[in-house]
Length: 116
Length: 113
Image (cartoon, rainbow over all chains, first blue to last red; front, top):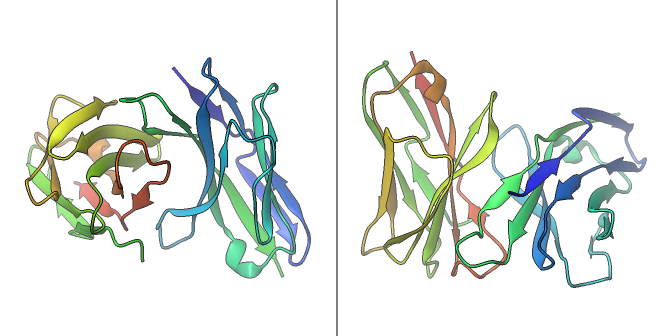
């Protein structure tokens, strides 16, 4: 079974600085998807960014980018120019491409605090 | 707003009781997923339906059951409730199981006293 590990329960960063959240995963599959979800105090799960395993290029969405290292099974999230609105729980998630196994497997989350 | 609706937003009930959580997927989405978020277990997949049929099962207790109706809305039934069932229950939907993105509803907060 696939597992996702986020080794940083909490992180903090100064406003306007850059922060990197770590995620590692374990799988024997070669084709899959990886995601970062944001959960603000409202509890809504918001998709931040996704990465297809077959793509070598790292995904980027505005201030959010990932460092995807397939061989190392590592998928970190970099947030540039941190803003107060970025404060939230961040979850790394894995999704298989195998039919019938397309559930999301989540890590334990990293609580990100933005210091003004 | 993801387009996925869940009712009720909050539910407080006693141990031993039964509750039903409802989810309406985004218009056009055929697949529905249920997840449980608790302090102990984190975010866990419970069950998936596609066009009315069960497609995959996760760590769902025997006391829990779900179904997806012809209009594609889904219900999660929780019975013989225990204190440990207190959690946030999310529904998510996607166009079909093969589509990578799942859109999450706002969740139902269940408190068992």
